[in-house]
Image (cartoon, rainbow, N blue to C red; front, side, top):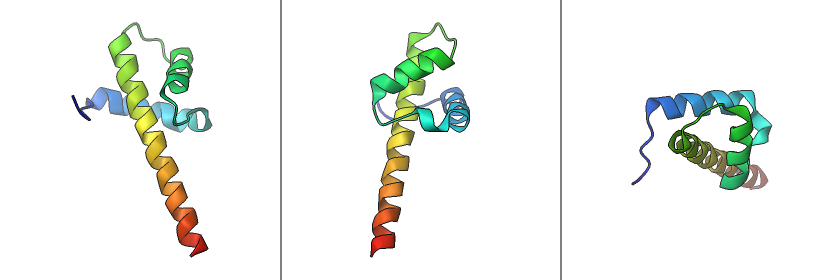
Length: 74
């Protein structure tokens, strides 16, 4: 496996991230519970793929914020 995401997964994840911006953290299981309440999908695989993409995006966003703080301090 790897970081293979379909366009559908990316599109849904980006829409959810924009609408519910502060709801997601770097924790996969918490994000999965939030997405279960938001999305109405019967597909476990699709939900897991969206959750993984959202979590990875949240981690990347947190890393960018941390780098910006370090750059401002220096």
